[in-house]
Length: 105
Image (tube, helix red, strand yellow):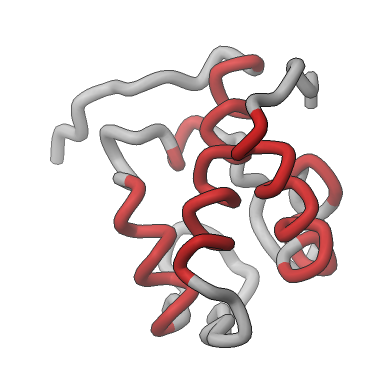
C-alpha cells in the first residue's frame, strides 16, 4: 500500500488509526487475518460513504463482505478522531487508485 504525503487531518487520522484500528486492519489499512484492507475498492466512497465509517465505529459492523466476523463498536473514539481516520483512509485510497465509483446493485 502506497502512503502519500498526508494532509494535517490525515496525519491525525493515521495516529488515531494506529491506536484504534491497526490491530485488525494493519498499518496503512492493508488488512490482516482479523480485518479487511480498507484500501480495497469495495470501500470506495460510492459504495461505502464516509458516514458508513462513522456508523461502523459507533455501532460495529456485522460480517458481510469478508469472512472476518463481526466488528465490535469502537466507542472509545470521538467523532473528531473518526473524521480524521476517514480522511486518512480516503487519502490512502486515492494514492492507491481507489476513487469514487457509483454503486450499482
